[in-house]
Image 1 (cartoon, rainbow over the protein chains, first blue to last red):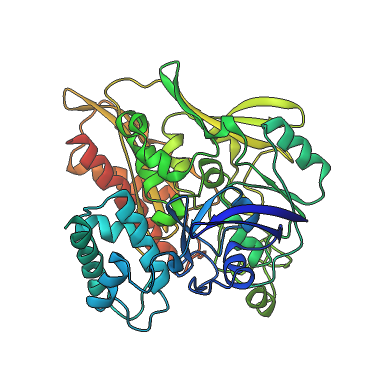
Image 2: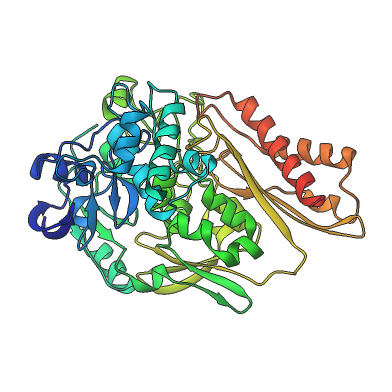
Amino acid sequence: MKTILSVTVNGQPRDDVVPDNMLLVDYLREKIGLTGTKVGCDGGECGACTVLIDGRPRHACLTLAATCQEARIDTVESLAHAGRLSAIQRGFHEKLGAQCGFCTPGMVMAAEGLLRQNPAPSEADIRSALAANICRCTGYVKIIEAVQAAARELAS
Amino acid sequence: MEQLPQMRMHRPATAEEAVALHAEAAAARYLAGGSDLIVNVRRGIEQPEALIYLNGIGEMHEIAESDGGISMGGALTLRQLAENEILRRDYPAVAEAAGEVAGPSHREYGTLGGNLCLDTRCIYYNQSEWWRATNSYCLKHRGEICHVAPGGKKCFAAFSGDLAPALLLFDAEVELAGPDGRRRLPLAEMYRNDGLDHLTLAAGELLVAVHLPALPADVRSGYAKSRVRGSIDFPLAGAAVRLSVKDGALGDLRVALTGVGSWPFLVPGTEKFIGGPLDEETSAQLRELVRAKAKAMKTTTTAPHYRRRVAGVLAQRLAEGLATA
């Protein structure tokens, strides 16, 4: 009923005993205390729980922690270094890509996943990569500008 | 959402091992991506005691050309299918259907086998435990009556996988591993039109791979769907079309539908258009034929008559686009 889980979370290798029925989002939030990852809809419809698993966006609320053996998991907490925001975080900050902020960690990680695969995305690429993430505040325009700003910064 | 039940996870390395584990365990379910299964577990619709996790089975991740066709492992992700060069070139309806499933994050872990074996869906079924309890459950799960058609004893929950209609166009076969060994089955025979029990698979049978046969060079195909949220959602109606054109006449025409019945199916009667042109008159006839065969019921928040109409229009537009491509 339990698994010894060996994973790398935000660059740190870890071994934890996790119940087989523990969701990744509960492992991150409750076991490790990384509460940046949010739970919105509980059913894969909102994308607030998006984290990167081996560099690809996935829903932490629909992934069992025990299926992440040997995986590399990156959450929103991995982005800033020594208090300095990453390019995508700075984009959201400067372009006002966040309002209430609840969707933002998922939105940021989906965008981070996109920029790792495609450092110079078109607007269509950005819309397509963020299609599984809902924001009820911004109307998306500022979010797309945030990702474009981050891409420009990474290119310079 | 409900608390997840206690479950034991098993990690077989081969399909045969998976089948044996499934047979030993009580209330076992195969788990691949889990993008649908885990939602249903959280809603109390599924309460497995054992999960047989398929990701460690090497052959289920393979994709290769074989006998001029292509073989695809059941654990391939939808993104892998959508990006596959062979599918995009020779079986574009399949690549397009894979790329139209849910959103990009779901496609990173949702799988071919999972999409083909997707449970049927209904607004009275895909709800939380407290919602269903409050509404006296339904025929599909713990209840006595179907709220969609209260007079009958049939469940109308809709099959909503996007890949199945595209694969039906090409006479796909599924390779199944079960307690009695392996067998191959035409994909069309894996389904029945029954929302309660839409898969003909035997207990514990595992979909290991899907095989597509070689195609004539001039076959064109495509997939389109209608949905509530354009960026992510199950189909209100989905249509896959395959055709070929020679000297201005249709040499081949097939239409398969999803989301408008408890199974995905090839629309009967399209062969009558073969040999003639696809012009304004015949494409309208095709639209009406498809609409007549799309027997959507009130299983979504969108009205059934709209879904029937949209099925016909999707097929018509696809056929017109492919015929003039």
